[in-house]
Amino acid sequence: MVGFLRSISVVEWGGIAILLLAFGVQVFHYVRYMSVVPRNIRRGTQAKTNSNGDVQGVSVIICARDEAENLKAYLPSVLEQDYPLFEVIVVNDGSVDDTDLVLEQYAAMYGNLRTTFVPQGAHVLSSKKLGLSLGIKAAHYDYLLFTDADCRPASPRWLATMVEAFGAQTDFVLGLGVYYEQNTWLNRLIGYETLFNGLQYLGMAAVGKPYMGVGRNLAYRKRFFFESGGFAGMLGLKAGDDDLFVNKYATGWNTQIVAVSDALTWSVPKKDWHSYIAQKGRHLSVSTHYSGRSKRRLLVEPFARLMFYVSVLLLLCVGNFWLKGIAVFLFIVRWLMQVLVINKAACVLGLRRYGLNVVAFDVILPLLNLYMLFKADKYGRRW
Image (tube, rainbow, N blue to C red; front, side, top):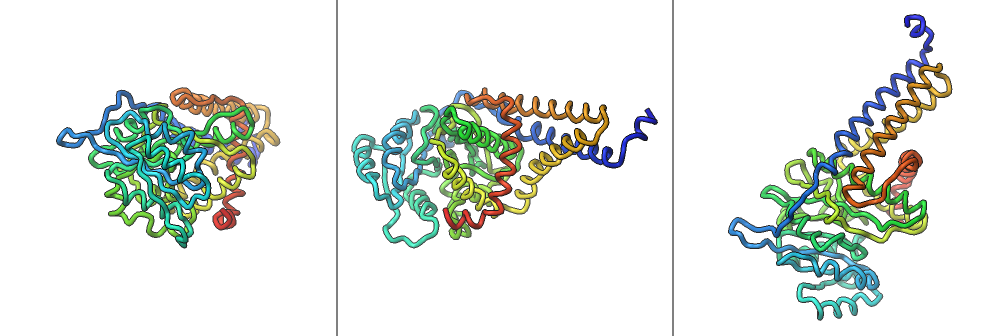
């Protein structure tokens, strides 16, 4: 044994040390954060009531720009939610298609639909933030639930399930928005990325470290929005009405998560690489404005992932037989851990399962994100 240890070179010692450290960080991340969702299943939802036993009303707010076709397809599933007291406010954000006509038709059919609009000629970088602010101001109720015009709630219990998570001290409820599944490589990549990111931000929020939410499925209080100053300080950014707002104001004590299939929202995914890259660029341009603490936390896992792959390749190239065996063994163990955690959550949420393609996505996505971060300013301006 002594002779074996002495035969290991300095480079090999360095490789195995980095491998073990990176592997430990990855295990901690998956156990601590990524595996939280399957343990947070909510069952038996009921209408939210106040201290007097009266049902708490809910305002669902949707900002729509040129979304006539999506509103035709998906708005009824929001208007027909199984909840006794709610309104749906659709903000027409300068649409030039038939959005107004569609809203007029649905307003005649549904008494709980209200509409407003962003004034023509409003000179703001983010008209969506202005539109949401107008919708929030018009809301009758304190509980606000947000989604997009191209989203369909997974069930008639979406609204009730999300709102049921509010407690006396809760200002934010974070949900998960996923994309319709198609049999293409890009769609599988988008699905995996969405699930991975969702498990991460929901898991971190569940242990008291919230850093983002998605506007496709997000709830907070009207009172809190105005008391905190709303989108003040974010108006110079085109995006950020969801994740940046959560990053700035959500805390471990005022945030709850909902992770159950009934409370998902399903959205239409991007179908080509150009649209997908544009969407990623817009989102990542906002992430550069996250708090320093959030940035540091979010860098740990991808850096450990990079070091893990580098050390595995290093040991496979220069390590002796036993060190190569250790590298392969830990690679397989990590992959099995990923598949188990990802697919267990996918099973709970009713989503697509993943196998060997996890390795490809695991390598491609951090490299793509790194490239996009270097281009963040460009994408923030362009889109």
